[in-house]
Image (tube, rainbow, N blue to C red):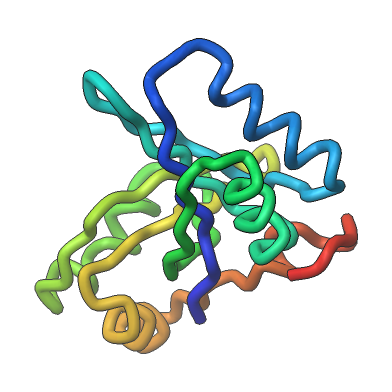
Length: 147
């Protein structure tokens, strides 16, 4: 199972993250996870949001280029070696990880979010080894908003 992630292109200028977060808050769009990567002139703000279509529309209204891509979210326990166990079958299948980030959900577990070079094959490989991808509903729980 894959989930949709919003990617917002940002100029490397003060206040740009504020514009995005304020627009999401005003529209009632929840942000579950986020990460920013940058170079000297621009950045990419990646977000998992409660309403992907509304979030993209908001960014386009702000004249901020935004795209949507598929990512895979996996719940992992907060114990030594859990990431290595997750990545072992991916490595053995020679599937490239384009990028990943993680966030904590509780005292002893986290969600790792992956952009794979071959997402469908990655999901099949993970499932074959007992790892079940998380849905958007699992990430947001009962907080509301469209998925």
